[in-house]
Length: 154
Ligand SMILES: [Zn+2]
Image 1 (cartoon, helix red, strand yellow):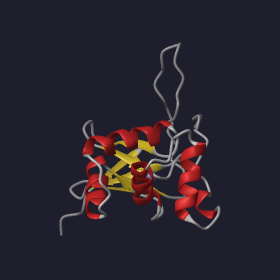
Image 2 (tube, helix red, strand yellow; image 1 turned 30 degrees about the vertical axis):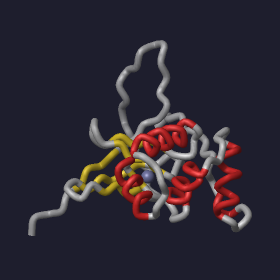
Image 3 (cartoon, rainbow, N blue to C red; image 1 turned 30 degrees about the horizontal axis):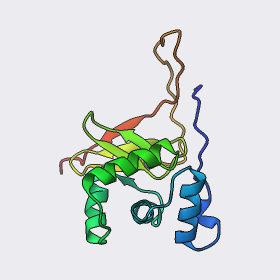
Image 4 (cartoon, rainbow, N blue to C red; image 1 turned 180 degrees about the vertical axis):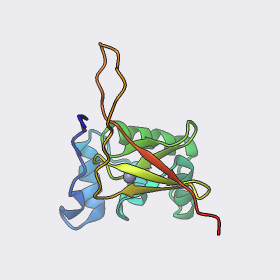
């Protein structure tokens, strides 16, 4: 499979100084983002608990519970800024549903229908045998596979 993968800006960042808030600020600055209170607050929710897949609505809900004072619009903007800066990866599952993935390395996903859960497919290569012809002036950025699952009827 010939796929260009984006190098991850986030690898091993948790292993830096041991102080997550400090690391988060450094990480935002390194990504060209001013570490505002809102960015740090949302970044904390996103990155403090390992690899996660979150929708904007889900993060907004967590922010409300954690008393991080942000609007849904700010959550959207921040997620897109983080994505552009390489701190998150966007995973489109349905046309309408976008998940933001804190694991920015190249990987594929299971999506559990009905539960709206996105799971990383770990340690297994997926081989895409044939890719369609693409326009001459384009190149493939990456190929992402979403394997949709549902619970078996018992
Ligand atoms: Zn993922």
